[in-house]
Image (tube, rainbow, N blue to C red; front, top):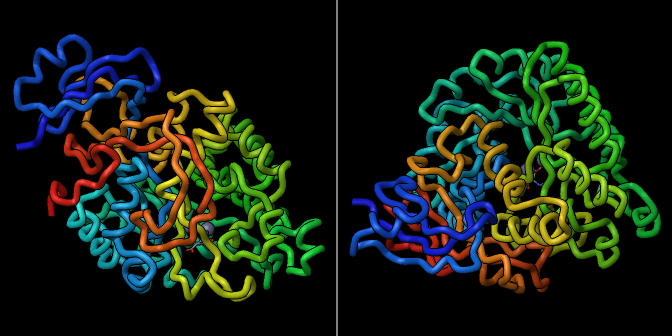
Length: 438
Ligand SMILES: NC(=O)N[C@@H](CC(=O)O)C(=O)O
Ligand SMILES: [Zn+2]
Ligand SMILES: [Zn+2]
């Protein structure tokens, strides 16, 4: 039987405090009924001062399994996700073997279910082996047990416009979406960081904004032409925000994501040559940070996605040019969004629920997450303490990797509890290893 939890005096989406009862995997009662229906066996959780949000949904996570279990496994990555307040993640396809067949996506889906921390939705590759030459078996992945709806060659750009067009046409048949990693390859050969004043000073090969913007501009036009759905991964420049804003004003079916790190960090950080700040797309300028915050606030950017990219020490602790691109993010995402968007007055908690849960669930066609906080809904929830402060210590995190760009920084907020279908995966800020059903 599923445990019962009585959350007392919690603030749903930051609204007035109420009691909430979780029973039989759903939100069983809200308000005065909750205590009355709780019975004696319900575990009481004091929610005073805490915000109740729908469980977070990440549209962009790298779990590295199969292939790079030395960097992360489905088990360690999803445990990190639960600790970050997530109840569902989309696992990117750049694994080894690539998630480009029904067999591999079903394996990832099954391992996620066995781990039990969050629901794992595998992303399918657009092209075989991410090689950009031949379309993968998109239909077979969609029809598999994993029911793939999001397709991406993330890590690589689908740069051939003919292949991109075919992929956009193909996914329409099963209401899928192509999530593009927008990077013009010729404009970014050997690129190491954002192209600008800092790259010139440091003598590192620059990565111009136009390399991202040119692909986004092309792809929104392709999406319009074929009447399909496009999602833009980790948008990072002011110009990209403008293009997406223009596309939406024309009625083009495009959605876009920004990462927590692009909401706060800039290319200035490269001055220390610390590869923890090396990421794809690169950290940009203050003006870009302001533009992505404004885009997220006005709805041009639909969601925040972590692009959690764990790497081994060997792949990160080396000189800048040799280091891998990527940073971890699952366990700090909500803190960064609170700091940059809520504490600055740009988003309400209801908006946070939209950008970190409702909208990513809708884009990924995940129907049982990102739901309203209402009686009868599946109890996929996170209980958040906005008054807490935490100093980020990668050694204390659940992810195997230590490449957090926020290490040593104090960030606001803390996950108190996460519930997946009414079962606590995190309680009192601690992972519920024993309770996780295998
Ligand atoms: N973001 C990164 O810097 N790296 C990602 C790939 C990607 O998201 O493009 C990775 O897989 O390591
Ligand atoms: Zn990418
Ligand atoms: Zn990625």
